[in-house]
Image (cartoon, rainbow, N blue to C red; front, side, top):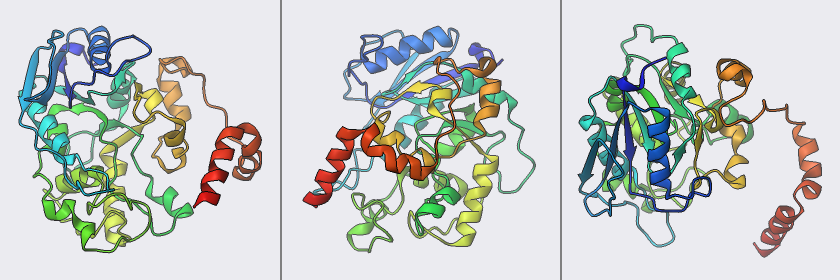
Length: 332
């Protein structure tokens, strides 16, 4: 296994003092402690904002950048923080000195290092003029979208170029190649103020692309032109190019096998969208990770019953949630 002495860990984002129920510490402090336990000789860098309250837990480096602020701040719309992610991630990566890098948000807690083994076992990239990395990078999969799977259920909702931007591991130069891009312009951030939405999937967002899509397409555009019109572009060439990069450059690993704890998004609501995420063969992954059981201690998943069985039994399995859905339906 890659030695922790060869790894830089970039903890990126604002310091999160939210209580972590497992450790009893603030989320960012819990992340730092776990990183020190799991990767004892790694270089640990906090990349945050100049106005942040920062307690020096023992970081090797603290990088404090000027906060570029959110975009898309319009009444009733969700702010877009992609420029904040770009600035803090790039600043941390440029301060790093090791060969490999783990980029992770400050509001999640690392629970294991199985992603390193997944990275080591991945086949190196074949020579191709479209390559933007030297080797594939491993990401968690919470927001990695499976285009073909989505199109089976939701026509006109492909979401191409949408890898997770929460946590990733790989060669430092490759992760830097992904994130060292131009900031999103206000024109792109406020795109849907004067353009019609292609569908109802992102009605609360004004930006032309989801943050994940903006980062990935900007990185790819350094090598190959990407003519993507909006977040749900159905153009065959766009989807084909997206599939090329997902099949060669990105390995999306389920969060429980990365493994991470992400209080903001690890909820029943978000896990109900498992069908739209990119997942490698789970059986193969379980065989790679500690003899069939991931470090989180969860057993191998049982095969889910058919969709219609789950739909029919839903009111009995989750009566409170069923009641809430019925109430919302009649209210709307």
